[in-house]
Length: 336
Picture 1 (cartoon, rainbow, N blue to C red):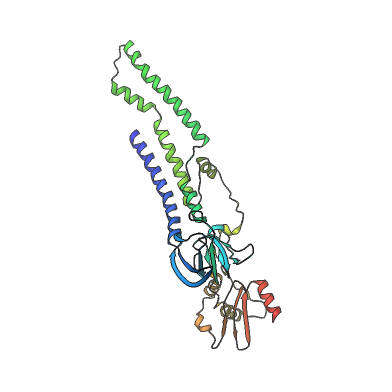
Picture 2: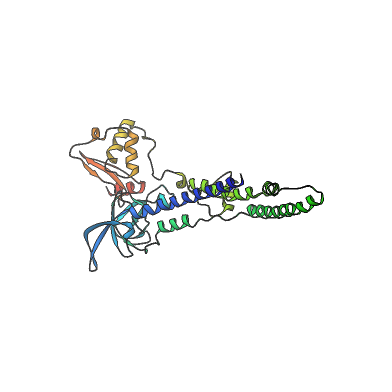
């Protein structure tokens, strides 16, 4: 039973380590398999000749192109264009952010997604220093440290073990003095039953199992003390709502103003969202539950959503319908 317990402890620890390694391998696979549209340089100029390579082959100073729907392959600075980017994967914030060339909002992070427009990005990090590389190092570097309770229990078990050794060793002289023969097998059996090695063997398995359970909840614990603290938590307060959202803004209901029927409102919303390829625009079409083809207008001019205008819409038969950010629509109306 002692041997089986020790084998189980080692087996449980090996499984947990394998799962942690799988998490790192998943991040590494994302880094290596993300395609990058490398722009070939000609002297000090960049031409439109595109070469598709793996993101792991990018070097500091390379320039790549990203369009709507692309995953940004590496950390860098935007040198041309502007775009809305979904950074929920790294920040937890559901609202897309605008990144543009120049200023203090030109940096982008590898692993985030471009939602609209087109940008040219210059790689600013050396190989192995990107955000994904740091995440991989964090997962791989997580090591189990003993908690104060575990250290105290280990000392207690060591003390008990010493006592049991003394008892077992001194039992032979007492047996001989009492003229009571004790076999070697009896000594070994007594020692194995007394010594609490099984508890010590399970300590590592318990600690690793706790770290593994936290990892499955996307929480990296680097010590057994952190696992114990997590077990004592009853209420968790988050710093922002984006941490617990799905990562994309999504339409949930239609609220027409007075004097406008819901059918009229839905038609206007659908027409103004046809050219919006962002998750928000697609969710509006999905919420409406209508066939977009039935709402198409002949000879209409569709206005695509861009990060610069932050609006989309349609022009037809003298009508102009727009949907977008409140301040963007206000400026647009004032310009009319």
